Structures are given as C-alpha cells and as structure tokens.
Image 1 (cartoon, helix red, strand yellow):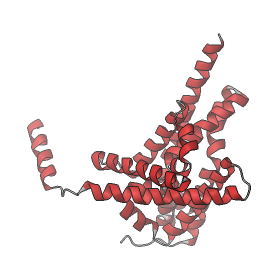
Image 2 (image 1 turned 90 degrees about the horizontal axis):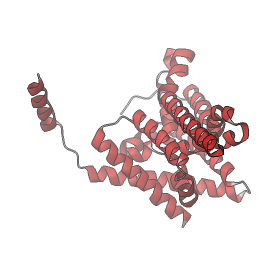
Image 3 (image 1 turned 180 degrees about the vertical axis):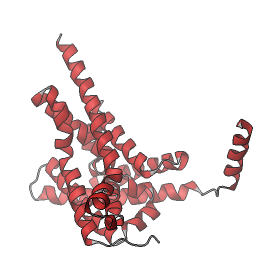
Image 4 (image 1 turned 90 degrees about the vertical axis):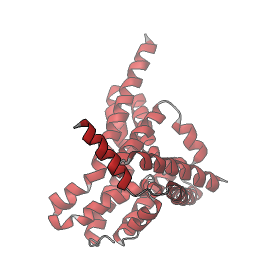
Length: 150
Length: 118
C-alpha cells in the first residue's frame, strides 16, 4: 500500500499543471496593496472630520464591508478574488465577501437554514477561533500578572 | 507617505500569504482563521500595535489587524473588569466589524440574487 501511495503521489505531481508562481504573488501584492491604500484614504477622510484614530478605523471597516457587499452582489468581487488571490482574501474585504457570498448563494434554502446558517460558513470559524485564541492569551496574561504581584 | 506605507505593507502581507497558499494548498477559510489567530498572538506579545501605529491601514485592514483588535479588547477589559473582562473584551472590540459584516451581509442577501459562477 505504502509504495502504491508514493507512486500515486508522484503521478499526481506529474499530471498536475504547474503554474508559474511569481505572477500570482505580484497580483496579490498589487491587489492587497491597493485595498489597504484605499483603507488608508478612507481612514484619513474620517480623521479629517475630527474623529479619533480608533473611531476612524472602525468607520473604515464599515465602509469597506459595505462596499464589498455591493461588489459581491454585483458579481465584481469574485472577479477581484480570481485575479488577486490572497490580495483579495487577506484584507477585511475578503472576510466581508465570505460572509455575504454564501448568504446570497443559499438564500433559496430559507431565512433560517439558508441565510441564517450559511452566513456563518466562514465567519463562524473566524469568530470562534479569534475569540478563543484571544481568550487563551488573556488567561495567560492574567496568570502572568497575578504571579508578578506575589 | 502614509499611503505608500499602507500600499507596501498591505501588499507584502498579501504576497506572503499568497506564497503560503501556493505551497500549502490551504483553503481560504483556514487562511482567514490562521490570520486572525496569528494577529491576536502578535498583538499579545506586543509586536502588532507598534507595527500598526507605523503602517496604518496596511496593518489594520488585513485580517491580522482583526486579531490584534480582539487582543486589544481582551487586554483593555481585563484592566477594567479583571477576569470577567477576558470574556468581554474580544466581542466588545470586534463588535463593529462582526455586526457590520452580518447586518450588511444579511441586507445584501435580501437585495441580490445568486449569480452563476463564471
């Protein structure tokens, strides 16, 4: 079995088309860079209205999410993702896309089991592990602090 | 200057993740979880906030920044409410992002029709 497995892996490797990696990396750099520059532009706009940095970033997050929802609905964001790869995935816009895209796709299955469940397809794991990891880090920090007090 | 920093830093983070994806075949969902968890760890060891202060949106727009925001919330609430704060801060700090994504996502799903994948 082990030999067959290895032979199979070698065969798969041989028949899998090899993509040049550099164009993809450069596209990811450009798309990610542009989205972040846009984020900076929006943040600066809000800060110019007199908002603090934290509030300006929160507003920027909202604007980017709303823009992504519209671009996803108009079928434009999937094209950006196809072109930019990780460049469209890593920013908060990629998260927003992953929330709205399955919700739209499965709306035919109803309010609860369609939109309600599928909206969390990616958001669920991200929220769960984000909250869990920051909680664990919080507990560690809490314990370290307690020991310093002794 | 701050635009150039945002462009370069955001671009480099995305390029690095692209390299990771090319070499591991990790799916987008796993990548996002990995980024948020990594961001909260980098926040907790005190690296991400100084980096974000320097790089601006180049560091806050990527999901790493979302992880850092979670940690910042936990850390802040812990200072105010002690142990209970560890359960409170994450959601408080990420409330705008999560509520925004869910509410706009819901409205989007009502407004838009599913498209055929091209």
